[in-house]
Figure 1 (tube, helix red, strand yellow):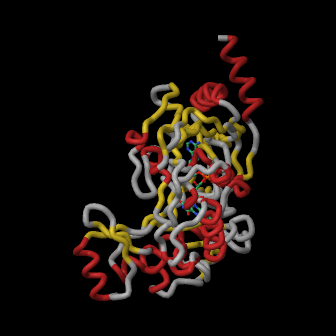
Figure 2 (cartoon, rainbow, N blue to C red):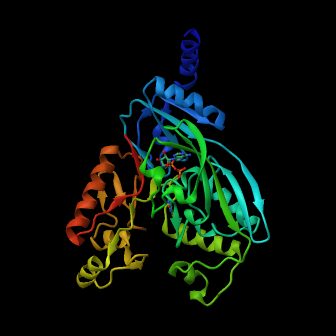
Figure 3 (cartoon, rainbow, N blue to C red):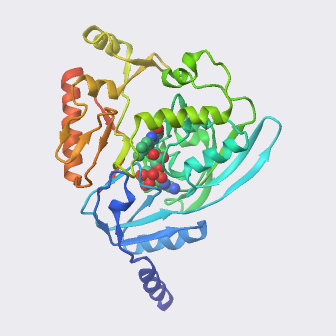
Length: 352
Ligand SMILES: Cc1cc2nc3c(=O)[nH]c(=O)nc-3n(C[C@H](O)[C@H](O)[C@H](O)COP(=O)(O)OP(=O)(O)OC[C@H]3O[C@@H](n4cnc5c(N)ncnc54)[C@H](O)[C@@H]3O)c2cc1C
């Protein structure tokens, strides 16, 4: 008994660290949390989970916070900032390599590392901010590639089973901007991810912006470095640096509609942009819908829809509150529903 009381007291001293959540959110919105810690190794997780349980706290893992919005009044949450670092080759042959990466590694540094070593597969995901451990959470994607295409397995601490284990790709329930991890917040802590990368020649992503970069598609072959440069230059032209103008990237996922819904939309708006998916489903551009609704550049209190990209909600003066962003989201969703009959889904996660 004495030992438990002593341990709780010691952990209390260690974890009672205030955290200004604004500094851990791409959107620069949030209050102050009472408990926080840096997670540097798997060995620390048992103490963290024990402390949270004893104090009836929810644990919330923070990577770089580029896909997270915090409210100003958060209580009973223990914030764990993931800093687990490692890049290790597990096995390789002449065609491919299996690499294990710590969840706290910076994603784009890992992409750069893979390109320097001539491993292909993630070059299209260049310049996505955030940590490696967050990539499986919403199955990050860009230019026709999703991280699920290269994930072999994800190592997690499963809070219910109270143990570490590797989850194979098929068990992660990856979907467009979704996974078992996003659907079950507070159930898993991702500590490492294993990626299978290729040693074969890369291909240029079949996306208009990228094809245009390579002379309107007339250049057929490019090196990994050239593809990365094309992606970075295209992203820089379209997106906002969240460190300068707070934002969380795309605020809404592209809605998926069926053939009948698409036909109806096309009758009203023949210039709507769609991308064919599997099972006769179509992804339509949420940015196009917002633009067409005349919302680009519009402000909602201190939240603005970027003039550069209709999918980006930003907080340029760093004054916006959680209430502002909630109201902006609601208003945009209602306008789009009314005009197109389409439901928008928010991409960033909310901690409140
Ligand atoms: C300018 C900009 C551009 C972007 N472009 C893209 C893009 O092209 N494609 C795209 O898909 N996304 C994009 N994003 C969104 C974001 O960068 C990604 O979702 C990224 O993976 C988030 O990483 P993070 O470390 O910042 O995650 P955080 O915001 O810290 O966390 C996001 C969620 O994952 C959980 N989480 C994080 N790490 C762990 C872990 N180790 N274990 C368990 N749960 C965890 C958090 O609790 C939270 O629920 C963009 C964001 C910005 C600001």
